[in-house]
Length: 219
Image 1 (cartoon, rainbow, N blue to C red):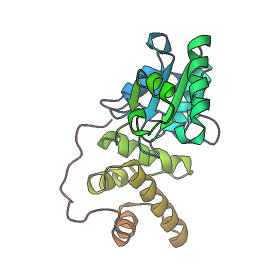
Image 2 (image 1 turned 30 degrees about the horizontal axis):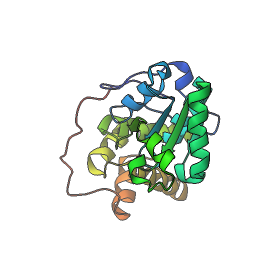
Image 3 (image 1 turned 90 degrees about the vertical axis):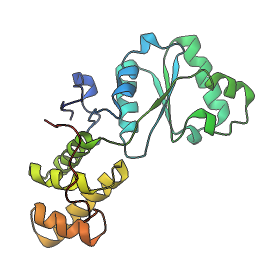
Image 4 (image 1 turned 180 degrees about the vertical axis):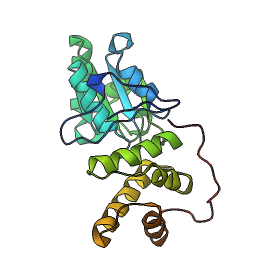
């Protein structure tokens, strides 16, 4: 599920959704550069790249789409395998030409790598970074996560939330989960009133920032 908005780019069909259990991938200013780079493997200076970003930012979904599109290998979590395995995977990628994508919480410079040969190789690897969401992406992601749960959301709900919430993927997922639970528990639709009551009671929005406007124009 990917829809363009102001400052966002549309994805080709094979990058618009993952498998049946995947959530939506929405591309905005915070992840567009990473997605664009991963879609152009032929231009890579080496056959390996590292993707970093906050958890909940869609980085694993991007990895699955990358693997499906390119046939490349994805190591989701550099600490999920040994340094020796990453070393051999790096060498195999250069030899075979099949790209390797490593997903991590931080760039290789922060990994405390014990294997010198691996450290030297990763020093030459491009690091792609997913930033925290902008206003438009945050709004679209809130709406898409509700749609994934089979719940329609009036546009004014996301517009109410975004200017008042901490701008992070983690907070977006917390907000959606809290509203979903409140709606089920109280048997009420997710409107602005339920949203305000629920998020204020749980401290998920800042009541002192009611006038802050979303940056940019979302479509």
